[in-house]
Length: 320
Length: 314
Image (tube, rainbow over all chains, first blue to last red; front, side):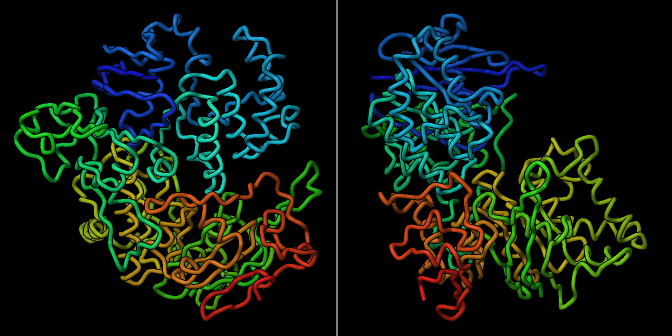
């Protein structure tokens, strides 16, 4: 088991009180798997990703246990995590492609980065060159400034940089969302290729775009308002979801070949609850078409079939 | 109703403005009454530039835009207000369209003072509430609030309601749903489709092909400022002919189908040959040759209501 997260709860400390952004997240990620993490904005998907790497204020660790390759990750301790970051667990934050140092040539920037992690750059260089070929970037990019690269090239460069030290776990936050469809496809497929070549053992891909996940992910985890809703294999989530939120979410996506005149899609009425003072029980309750009495209690995230987890009283019944 | 005729926009770039960038290059298409046309292209294809030229936000380098046969640049001085009574736009980011210091409905007051100073009191309130109801908002819930108290979907509807207050005939919708969540974006799309049924013409600018198919009758595919394919949405999606359109279709992530292993050409350098086909460097047609690099392909009708700009398909 590569990554194991148990009851992870992270809040944001604000002047008005604590924002319950992530509540009791429990899941496993096997070696070699790409897990997609999807949900609407504000559902806590980025909080989950970031808390595994860099849990800085206003994020506040409440409880939970995270282990990576059978060793516990001290995510609550910023300093102890320092030795893990980039080497064992690496992250591509949202908009990372615009965060490259604009006044350094890319090659020099990478050298400084690697050396800051006390690793000899010379020993990495051949691998760096090989991986540039893998993402179809010319070697000259190392002598260029970030401004000379297009968005898709920068995103591919960031992917190479983030996995240079072969981390166990890569967290990729919205790496495809600012790109054109052609670049999107290239970046997504290259991520799969990196995984296949074991440049990272496993990956969590955070995105709001479920159709991208359907192309590349092995497992998909759906979140709603800080709670995990459903986790299952890619095919199961897309073709036979069981959680009412997942069902509605999938049904709102226009498909190529679906037309307004022929089949009108419907959105989900209502809006997500405020997490400053979240409703008790299932947080999807208010928008859920099948909610009933029992939903005022928090539904447990249980395995109803092999590798299919769901948090819904309707599906798990009262015997859960 | 709206006709784009050889429309071009050229920017001067380079240190001393010595180079020219053709953001939009001799674009022709029409939007008829009650028609919803999607303008589809990647970033940098010039799709927003066209929208802005229609809204008179940027100047036109050459060519004309005709609204009901009248050149839109001929509106001068006070008559510009008449133009904006008919044509309005809604943009991508609803959060930055509002001034956070003022209440969101301040914008309606501006409209009132500028366009309807003679409508007062109850008549104006009724008109305002009607247009909010038209976009699916409950006036009690949304009026008298600051922008941060409303959701992205609500703000976007606000902006559409503002446009509707003016009894417009034409709406430019520039990526209006790309910032919204999946659960609300469909509702905005349906709203656009309903407005069209009530007589509005809409130019729907998007990079997302599945949205374009869902909502539009006609599509225009733009690449590097040139129209590469246009015609009935049905025909373009069922039978894409231009190599660029084919590549786009193959790259769209779909729920019913996995990506093919087909190789895609990446848009790493913008080295479009000056004279020839803009897509030359990325084109994967086996028959690509020297002529493609030298002659600008002309849009030709390959079947009724389906135009393609590729010389190799004739």
